[in-house]
Image (cartoon, rainbow, N blue to C red; front, side, top):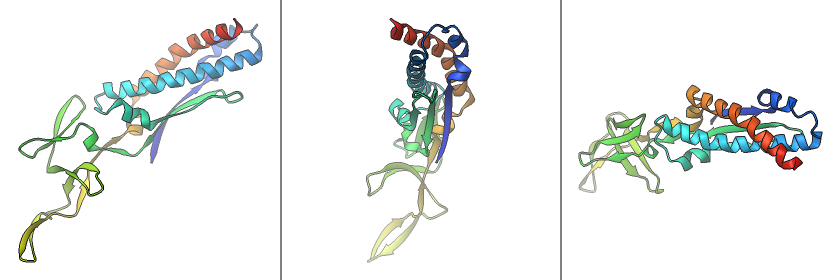
Length: 196
């Protein structure tokens, strides 16, 4: 299982903002930093889901958010980590459909694409997916004086994993820009709130 992460570290991102807070008590400053880091981490998770969808990965926002976890900052550990964890996503989740002609299409990267030689099936477990047959296995078999089609083995098709998409340079740059823009502002707001 792969993972990608965005590390939000107070040392690198708010050092200038902290320099302006010389008169603030250390305990208040630390509490404000923890709250600001965690707020930015929450915003980064939401932005990541939006950016992944904007890049053309037609997944539900809830599916993306479920794969993104946050390790929160706490007193003494002034780092928040936004991490995407998970396996490749079943291709059916990219709005997989089968038309009347039997062609399977998925919506990814700006348009519908045909998945050659694929079919949609629901397994006995209830899992629905897009499958292809391995090799030339679809043949007629006679059993108990009845002719049946036999088409195993089959295997399910998958799209990219959310961690792989999360690690995309465009998405990482968007998240880093969010941290640079929001963290100092949220930190100042938290300090103002705590010292009010």
